[in-house]
Length: 115
Image 1 (cartoon, rainbow, N blue to C red):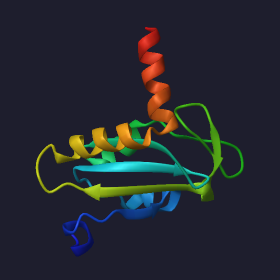
Image 2: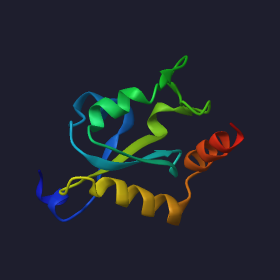
Image 3: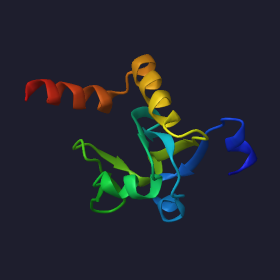
Image 4: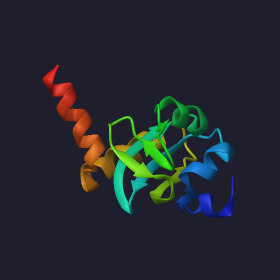
């Protein structure tokens, strides 16, 4: 664990270049596209969860999200904060979603309500 994470700071990585170096840690993470927060999640293993999101690569330098939107690679950023205590990442995620209400988290709730 780095000193930055001990203080609860968020680590920012370039979405496309950094995906090869993602740590397998429990954390809360946020996805930004075009500078706007779009999704907040949490996981026991960041590396596995990233690949579980089913991002696809479009033509040129485009990224197709699981939510069907297309963004340029260079506009995609992931931030994560490692959790020290077991399960702490779930509470951080819940509080952030309630406070910030990212578009893709809200979209998922609407789809679940329709089922």
